[in-house]
Structures are given as structure tokens and as C-alpha cells.
Length: 501
Image (tube, rainbow, N blue to C red; front, side, top):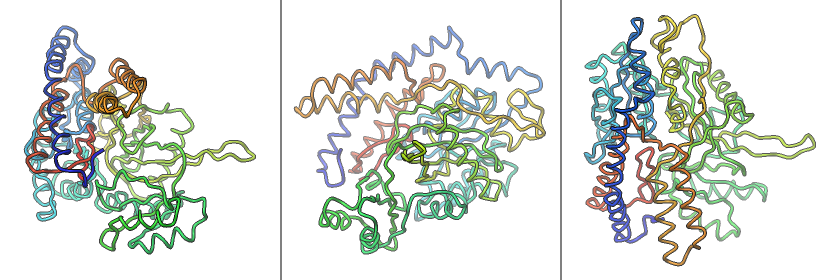
């Protein structure tokens, strides 16, 4: 993997190789695109068929839903779910470097708006103004925020303005809640304040503070350092401290850019499996929930059974966190957990520790695909509590059941898997750094995903966003990286994020 110290010509070759891969795959992708349109025409698909049936009901009243972040999988999935449930969907998103995002071409979106991105110089004023203009122009009933990590707090500001200056309601936490949950240090402090378990965590603003914690800790205890703010260059660094020798520890810590202006947290390392959750919370009640195994860069999604002990434990934590917060929270709430198995005289005991919180929608929402009418009830309970039950509506007098994935598919992204399981291993094989059997194992895994898993962006009734993502959006970003001599180490296909280095 390239980093900030890698020569520019390596980064140039990386961008050029990916553009060439897109060009070589274009004929096959285009064939799949037009074949999908033909198949959808000859054999009507479930989502459009559900929509027509719901819209034909004389008692159904469609709502206008604004979804921001439709260039990302989570925003696109939610747009399709509301479309399936019969509602009118307005899409909006940033479009970096002028390259149009794939979501604007989804069949599920009636109209798309490009939004100005908040900047350090101009702040969030233009962004909030643009959102408010869309809300009023399109007479939006509900705004569903699918913000990225860099604009979560700005969406909290926008929520307060929009709900104050229009009748639109927002699925988004306010500024104070978003700010508290968004940052690693304040989330840990808040969780401790609520009396819930957290890993041992220290706020550090100097290298000396790091060494003091390490020196007084038991020898067998390890820690991981995490930047409090968003820093793509160090996000993937999972180095355990202390290192094997004192000199190695001092050398590693000396390279960390830490100061009062750039604080870090030193968090106890918990050995075990990592899991993540996605929850929809409306007025202090959890309306939808899913949990799945996680990773530092999660690109394969498989839901835990909703009746499993782990899933129930993480749901219980989520409900308890919301209840103890003592306020009527409304928004998307996602936790990252580490699960450690502790053996004692009573047997094996699972220890659940939250390590991070994301106060925004998680890509795991894709696991609700095909459940548009069900999950839309939870969202619309914020604005439709007095409407009769049925056809995507709920009654205020009846509390609907918690929505969990029903026979969820396993999700992958073909562009990511093609590069990481086939092409990069092939390069290592040709360089003599990989055995043939290991490469064939990766190819076998890739084919298993293609045949038996579901691509997170592709829908046979809505194939253009998938085609656009790989043959317009990403090539456009790679060209922009070349022209601007911008270095990056990794990309997340599902969140359309480049990790700068």
C-alpha cells in the first residue's frame, strides 16, 4: 500500500492502472447494464411492483423525502427503500471535483441537487442555506441525513435550522449530541457518565503523557492510539503500544503528530472480534437495528442473526444508551464493539466493550434491502404518527415492532474485490511474492462473491448507478488526483472516500 512518502510516479501509476482497469471492464459492464434493462422490462422486479401496488391504494399519501449522501451506498439504499415504499425521493450530495455521483442517476430519485461542501474558510453557512432552499422548494416532509464523517456536525447544525424555519422534520441528531458522539474522547466520557462499560481510555496531548500512561500500566496491557479528529493518514495505524522494546516504543511515539491542537486518545486494546451496529432512533425509541462483523476497512457485510446472543446484547446496549441519555434522540446511531471471551469458573463469558460511536447512517443499512415498506414506517413515525396503519404508515396508538433484516443477503463491492482479491495478488504473484495456490484461493473467493453475494450498489431494476460508479465517478476522481498531484493510500468504494496520505 502506498503512503505519503511513496514517490509521485508510484501514485501516478496507481491512478493510471485503475483508469485502465475501468476501460478494460467497460464492454462487459455495459453489456450487463443493457441486459438488466431488458430483463427488468420483460420480468418486472419486486421493488417497482411493490411501489405500483402501494401507490394504487386510495388511502396512501406519499411523502416527499430528502436524502443527502446518495453518492454513497447507504444513501442510495435508503433512496431505493423509500421509493419501494411508494414515496417521492429527492436526492442531494456533494460532487467532489465536479464529478457527478452515481446516486443522481438512480431510478428511485425524482430530482437531484448538488450541494456546496462546508469548508474551513466559509464554514457551513452556504451548505445549510442550500439544504433549506431544497427543503422549501420541494416541500420536503422528512430529511434523512446520510452524512459522511467530515460533515456530521454540519448536518447537526442544518437540522436545527431546517426544523426551526420549515415544517420539515429531520432524522439527524442536534449539534450538541452529534459533537459529543462524533469525537472519540467525548463519546467515551459520555458513555462513562451514563454508567455503561468502556475500555480504559486516556486523552493525551503530548508524547510525555503517552509515555506516562504506558510506564504505569501493567506489563501485559496494550494500547492503541487514535486521533481524536479526522486524519486519513493515520486512520489505519493499529500499532500496539508499548512495542517490544523501549526504544521501539519511543521511536513510534516520536512520529505521531500530537499536540494540544491535535489531541489523541490512548485506548486499551481488547483482543477479540470487532462488530458494528446500525440503529434508527426516533424520539428516543430504537425503530430498526442490525449488527454485523466489522473490520478497520469494512467491505463485506453479513448480518448477525437478530436472535443471536451477540446481536441481542448489542441491541440492549443501544437501547440502554438511548434511554439513559435522558433526551428524545432522533437520528442514526452506530456503535463499534470489541467482544472478548473471558474464561472463568462459570465457563466462557462474553465481554462487550464499545470503542467508537458514529452518530450517522452506517453502510450496514444495506442489509435492510427489500424491506422498504417496513423500514419506512420507522422513519415516517416522526411525521405521520396520526395516520392510519397500513400502506407504509403507522398509528400513533400502536407501537410497531422493531425492524430487523429479514433473510438478508451478504454484500460486497465488485470493484473492491476485483482489485484486492484478484489484480493486486496477481501483481504479487508475478513478482514472486505470492504462491499460485494463494492467488487461486483469492480468485475462488471473488467468484463466490460474484455468484452468491450481492453487490452493494447494483440492482437489476436500477443498474445505472453501478455502471456510473465504476466507469465515470471513480475514473474522474483518479484523473483529478493526477491533475492535482494528490496522493492517496486507500479508497472505500461504498462511501466514495479516498484516504489522503
